[in-house]
Image (cartoon, rainbow, N blue to C red; front, side, top):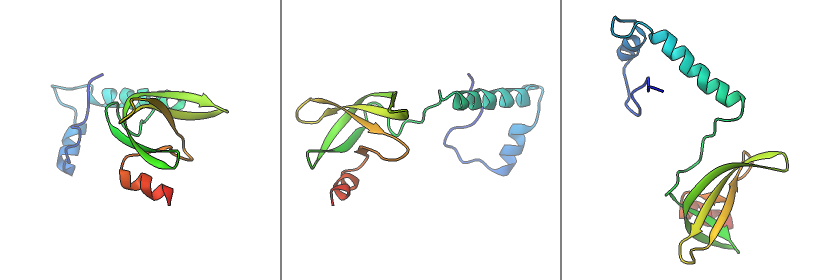
Length: 123
């Protein structure tokens, strides 16, 4: 699927107007926009669209036996536990190479993206 936007670039209102203007180069612009939005709305409605809180390879922190532990994310997946959707991160602990799964839901997170946030949770 072709990207319609310019990524993280901030654009002006003039550029937005130009984006929506049909041209000889792109006479189907509105059609493309509509079906791209429709595709993502269909994914969202069918619960197939997942926004992960981090990426494979990221360093994260979690609490294990009342201490903050650093780990590297090696896997991300969606799981259903007790009728609740969870995003699960597979993390390898920094010093022990032990694999641990931590869970993320709308109600709580078992991991943190900074050491300070994880340490604050222990207070």
